[in-house]
Amino acid sequence: MYLGKVVGTVVSTTKNEALVGFKLLVIKKLDEHLGMTDNSEVVVDSVGAGVGEIVLVSKGSSARYVLEREKAPIDSAVVAIVDTVEVNG
Image (cartoon, rainbow, N blue to C red; front, side, top):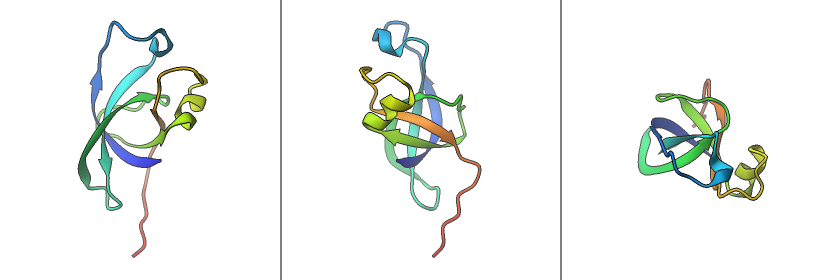
C-alpha cells in the first residue's frame, strides 16, 4: 500500500465490462512527508475520493478483493480517504 494524492479523473466510455460502474482516478504517489513524487498511476476508486484528497492505495490482488471483482483487470484501488498522517523521526 502507499499514500497518494488524487490529482485527476479518467473518463472512459468504452472499457472492460468488469470496470463498468467504477470511477477511475489519477493518483500521484506521496513520500513519508506527504510530498508528491514523480510517480503517478490510474486506480479504481472504492470509497468516493475526490480531487485534492490524500488516499491510501492498495495494490495487486488485494485491490481486486476489496472491489469484490477477483477476475477484473484491477491492479490498484483506493481503499481509504486519509484524515491525518503522523511520522515520528
